[in-house]
Length: 138
Image (cartoon, rainbow, N blue to C red; front, top):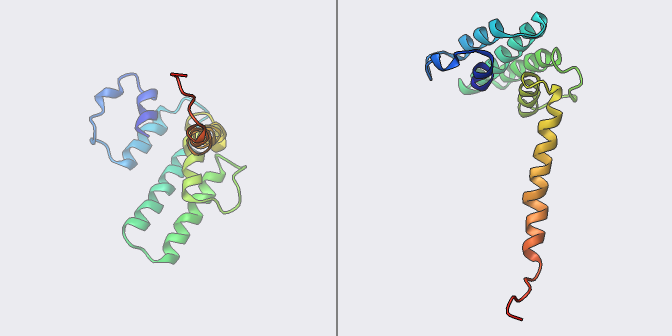
């Protein structure tokens, strides 16, 4: 959210760090939204629902209440990413929200980059270090 605000506002540095709460940031982001107004409203709703889920978990709500918050988040994110998979995790929903803010609905590019980094770290580099090193003195 802070990154999106920084990119959306010509003098974003004037927003003091820690000076705005999450709900206030959502309102400013929605007000600064330059795309379709309905999309901005849908994004704001998804962000509010994400915060609701966070608060539900942080405040130790019952499993039923947490599940209801998660379900509400899934519905809200479906408005900005109708192609989400069935029963997405909060992590997947966060990627969809961030992808939408970055003009990457569903986070396809972000997920592709994460898979490439995963392949590099977990496959390519370990394979490289398993190969014998040629003796430079020979």
